[in-house]
Image: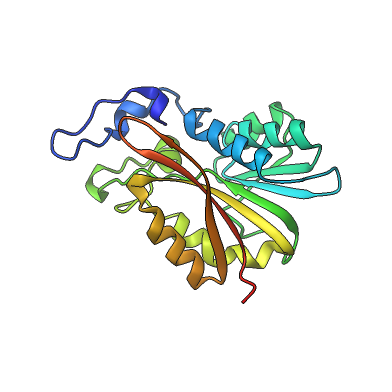
Length: 208
């Protein structure tokens, strides 16, 4: 999101969400998308038999890069039907879904997600597709806090997950939520930008 050079709020220094609306309905690749895709490729040993789910796939950028680099079987999901259409056009089979709701138990070797993470006060929310793609609620973790508790259900026993978060989202709070869900975590990639630090977290079922 930091590629978009947004205006900032005079009091908080944070990007104005409205200034990030340079696409109409689907979030397009930016610095966060690239960082997540590269981190997954650099920190996994996927092969053609592995099953990968890209939650909130958007344009399908991350999913397509993982598939092309590893040969793994990658599918996308997104609550936005236009995003599913764009991902399919990029060669990524995609289904309309609210996070992990339609997926069976113990199904994926890898789950990746670049969630909405910009903190946005309720009075500034817009009810449109781009709002849902960008806004993480008041603390930036509204979707993350729903995703992490359900994540162990869909991971294979030795499965892993990668999540892109921001310093605006409080990565330590995200890791605490993951620990409560029985997931170990570690930072695998970071990148600094004018308004935030992007962080890629890796999760795995706790062993102890």
